[in-house]
Each structure stands twice: as structure tokens, then as C-alpha cells.
Length: 274
Image (cartoon, rainbow, N blue to C red; front, side, top):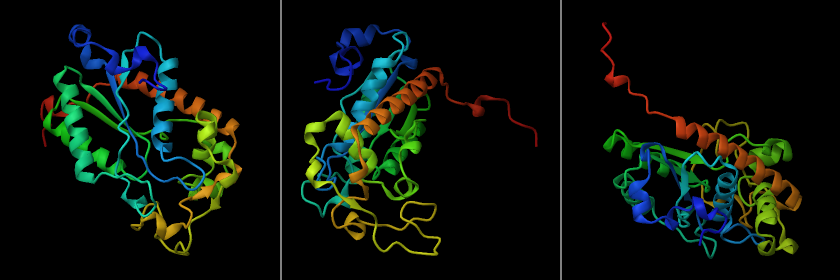
């Protein structure tokens, strides 16, 4: 049941007595992968986001020093993916449902005595949802430290692997995701159906962009016929391995920082004289 996650780092394999007796629970890092089951074109399975998030954090757990306490929860495979729902097979929760699920999971972790929880997000359609949940939980429990982080946001070597066009527009089922699945789950990639399709009809000479500083709302079918945004024909398993290894290295660095992190508390200091 632990899939890519090492058994000794898989939270559900612990007993309640082991959790009760765990020392320094306030600084144990608990990681909740949050993903999606959604279309990824004709060549990739629906499980792409869940696979990538789970595999990267699992590889990081293999590399993490044993003295740093960190555990991974089961991946929340269903996410907010309604931008893809015109493509059969996509399963989506509403933002409200996902918020409720993550809030109640987090509160369960808090009741067990833990105070550091990461929402590791591997789906581009829901970072705002996770950020809202994290902020609201910290507002409710001031000693609860929460970290909504995209799996891709840690330092990694991906930039050197892709063209400038792919880095800007290849946001879904393109070179990066296809390469990673070729490395992680090669039998699920339909290599005879690889697609290269970039977004259609984007505004030109405009401040507006697909996912830039001033975005416009879109559904996936507005931009692509195949469900692909990027060049999957350029993918290789070698690129995928570089991505997994370098991203997992980045997550090891981040987990070390999370373990050391203490919440700033300016409100406890003496007031400034103004």
C-alpha cells in the first residue's frame, strides 16, 4: 500500500501507540500529497499527477537522513480538476469538498500532537485551494505550521532539459510529465499516441496570459483539442529520471528546512513605540 514511499516512512504503517510515544512530535514533518485523477491526453494515464507527487516524495524519503523525522500520508488522489471535466475519465471534487477533506485530515493530524503539515500539490488546478486551507488552519490553530507547496517548486534541473517554448506553454501532458511517466510507469505510456499541441488562440501583444501575472479563466478544451498542452513527442525516460532525482533532492533540502522551521511570532514581542 505504500507504493513509492519507503515502508518506514509511510504514516499508516505506524501504530497508535508508536504515535503516542513519538518524541518531539511538534517538529515531525507530516506530508500529505494532494493530486488528481484527470485526463492527460491520448498517451498518458489518468494517474499522472498522483504518480509524480507520490514518486518524488517517496524517492526523497529514501534519501532523507534517518535522524530527521518525516512521514508521508496516503496520497489524496482526487482533487479539483473541473477544468478537465469535458474529457472522459476525469474525476473532480469541488473546491469546497477538497477544502473540507484537507481541513479534516489536517485537524486529525493536529489532534495527534503534530504541528508541521505539508500539502504537497502535484496538480496545477488547485494551488489556491491548498493555500486557503493552510492559512485558515493556521489562523484557527496558531501553533499549527502548514506549508502548501507544489512538487515542482523545489530546486531541480528541469529548466535545462526543455525548450523555452515548452517551459512557457508545456503545462500539461507535455515533455516533462511524459518523460517522468516513461521513467516511473513505462508500461502505462502509449508511445504510439504521443502528441505535440500547444495552446490555441492565446492573446497576442496583451498583458493577459494563460498562467502569467494577469491570467484569464479557461477550461482545458478552450486551449487544446487533444487535452495536451506541450510536446510529448520530445519526451524520454532519461529526462524523466533526471527530473525525479533532482526534484527529490530538492525535497530533501526542503524537508530539512521544514524540520528546523519555527513559526515567526512578532506579535509576542514588545510593541514598537510609534
